[in-house]
Amino acid sequence: MMILNLLVVEDEPEFADYLRRGLSYDGYQVRVASSAEAGLEEVRRSPPDLIIFDVMLPLMDGIMACRCLREWGYAGPVLMLTARDAIDDRVTGLDSGADDYLAKPFDFDELLARLRALLRRRGYGTSILSFADVELDTRLRTAARRGSTITLSRTEYDLLLFFLSYPEQTLTREVLLENIWGTAPGLNSNVLDIYISRLRHKLGEPPLIHTLYGIGYVLKK
Ligand code: CA
Image (tube, rainbow, N blue to C red; front, side, top):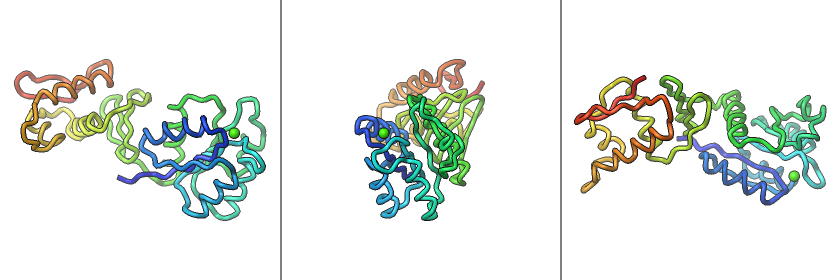
C-alpha cells in the first residue's frame, strides 16, 4: 500500500488542523505549513505528492507560491482553496499553475473527490474494485456507493475488499474468519456477524451482502 504525502499550506490554525485531521483519517500522510514561505521550504526539503494551497496567505499568497513552485519544476498536482467571493481570473484561469481550485466553504467529500481525481490524472493510477454501485479504491483505501464516500474501519474495509474480490461466490464463515482475522486462538466467531452487520449498515440499501444460513455469506444483487 502506497501512502500518499500531502502538504497543506494554510495560515489559519483551526482550518489547517481540520484539513489535517480529515485527510489523515482518509489515509493520507499530511504535513502542514502556515505560510507560503514555510510551504516552499517543505517542498524543497521533501516534495509531496500533492499540495493544497490556501490562496489567502500573509506576505506571499498561494498563487505566487504556486508560480514559484512551477518555476522550480515541481510537477505534482496543486489544488487551490479560495474564498467564494474571491474567485478571480487568476485562479479560475489556473494560470498560476494550479490544477484545480475549490471555493470555501466546501464539503469535505468534495475535497476528497477532487484530490482523488487530481491524483488519478497525474498517473498515480487507481486500483478500483467494483460491484453493482459500490466502488473500492485499493490504492487510496476508500470506498463509495453511488459516488458517496463510505467511511470504513480497517476491518470493515478488509471485509468489503474480500467480498468484492469474490463476488457472487459463497464465502463460508470459516473462510471469512481465517482471511480477515487469521487463525487467532479463542476468536469468538460472533465477531464476524458483528462486522457484517456494521458493514451492511454502512453500505445501505439495497442490501448486497446476503446471509446463507448455516453456511456463510455472499455478495450479490
Ligand atoms: Ca488563509
